[in-house]
Length: 312
Image 1 (cartoon, rainbow, N blue to C red):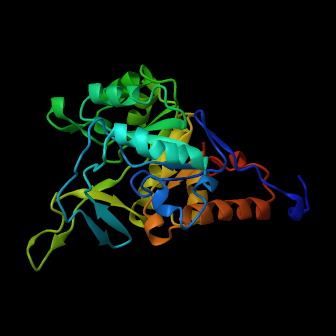
Image 2 (image 1 turned 90 degrees about the vertical axis):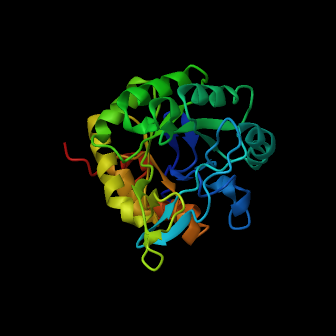
Image 3 (image 1 turned 180 degrees about the vertical axis):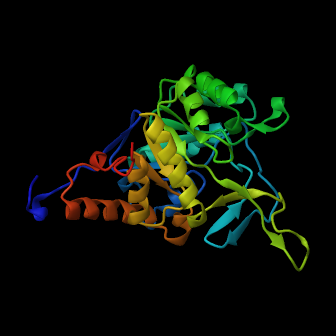
């Protein structure tokens, strides 16, 4: 190892199940729009990847307001996957990101296995997408609204259906609202997942005591931010201890120290979500903070830190 810290230039590059990233920091879907919204704050191509807003086969107007509220150490959201649909994304947003040189991960969602397959098929012939993140925290309308991500068989089936429609790396985003996260992870892997994204939001709610009513029009929403960090770390640790699969870890990452905890718990890369609302340059600052840590610790590659805290 080179003892002269000034000469160390750590290798921050990551291969996330076939998704090549220049550094291990991505921005979480739904918190960064399509990248344009943040271009005044940073070079959006300088971060590891942009995971674009959740996209469905047809446009969605989302849930009625209010649909966001700040909570202690986090926030609740019930946006309802408002988006213009896959065709608008491919025609209007992807060319911009491609021209900027951004590593793009498409986040896809649906109400049925057929929906997931159809929206994935739409990507064929379009250059500039490095991989697919599957939002499986969506209700399966054919199963009475049961979320795909809470049933191992449905997780396996939806991943299989998507894999049949694409040669791109596929990365389901696992829901934490389950009893056994390892069982869900195994199901995703059996379905052909190239990597895992963990974790999605936890279900929560807030009540207005003056009105004596739920704050969110949808009643329930997804809790994100520092409040969920210990849960996310625990689940990533559990999964990576049981299987050797690349993991994109997220859940309350606000700074480089948070990110390094996730990496040491077994994540190959991290995603920053709520932190973008607090600091629009958070992802870039975190990537630089990770580099500074590696230099200080005289570590040559970020891969050397992945899973370092796992006790077997």
